[in-house]
Image (cartoon, rainbow, N blue to C red):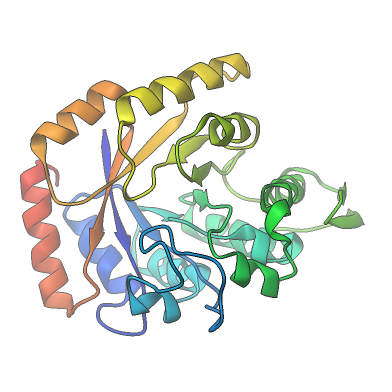
Amino acid sequence: MRYGIVLFTSDRGITPAEAAVAAEGVGFDTFYVPEHTHIPVVRAAAHPRTGDASLPDDRYLRTLDPWVALGTVAAVTSRIGLSTAVALPAEHHPITLAKTIASLDHLSGGRVSLGVGFGWNTDELAHHGVPANKRRTVLREHLDAMRAIWTEEEASFAGEFVQFGASWSWPKPVQKRIPVLLGAAGTEKTFGWLADHADGWITTPTEAGLDSKIALLQRVWREHERAGNPEIVALAGRHNAEQLAQWADFGVTEVVFGMPDRAPEEVQAYLARLAGKLGIG
């Protein structure tokens, strides 16, 4: 089982580059960052944790661009994976986003994976022209369009929301297939979409009953005739050795811990302590 770190980025505290260097130095496998392009002031969408329009953390208003953040990380690290938990591809044009992600994978030597979400903030999506009842369709089309650009010499796409004619676009990613992980609640509907369009699952922060949900995912995966096993990334709170052992038995492939956006020396000390408990490095 691998171990990763997610930094809820902001314009305060430790920078992504400093945090990732510290995480790589003590043995973590992957470095994740989130995405919100902006937060509409007036919203009808309820936050999943608060149940209303209030936000649990003001960093939602201050989140750094994930691809700029990961670009700074790629420049100062050599091994750690670069990912998002989660990005919102539906809020970007797939031609330009495909170029950005392919460039990052090219320059990092093939270290990119893409954690994506449908987007709980439907008001944010609406500002990007994404209808709330079409979030899954838009995400699917954007992923399919980007995969075409990444893999075809002359890529084209014709969908409901994305259309473009035969085009050239380089660089291509180093990886033959950039892994896509879906961050969403563990339901049969979610897992059906995942089995058709993604390579693994990122749990929600408050996900419970992982044993039964992972069994459901594996069943749906087989029913959709996918080879191998899905990646399963579990978001953890504090270190809990008993829970980690259970998750490994359930089939979790990576556990991701949050880190504070505090001064570099505080974060470095936290990561060293956590790595020691995990026995990595």
